[in-house]
Image (cartoon, rainbow, N blue to C red; front, side):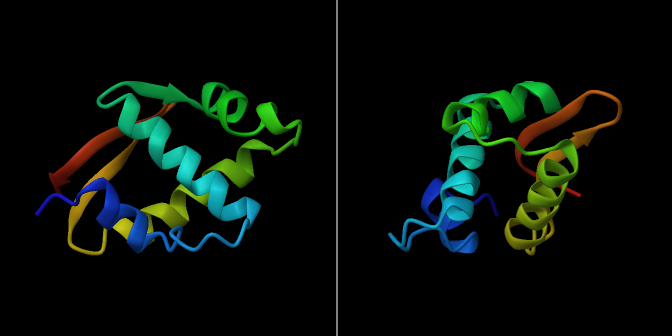
Length: 98
């Protein structure tokens, strides 16, 4: 079962307008993947688009950890939404069966 954008946001607990920068970052990340389906986004691309706008430096490990947490929350139903492309980056698959 593929999740809608609203269902994905609910699983990520990002509907609360509390202004938490971590929640906003996850929302930005989700929107970036949804706008670029099937396209491999490299770590430098993700870091530039997600954090450099706000002039906050975040390293690649933080990015990897954030994506891992998103995996846990949205892939509980057994479908794959974000695929790790070894040596390249991450790709939105939109809910492929594992």
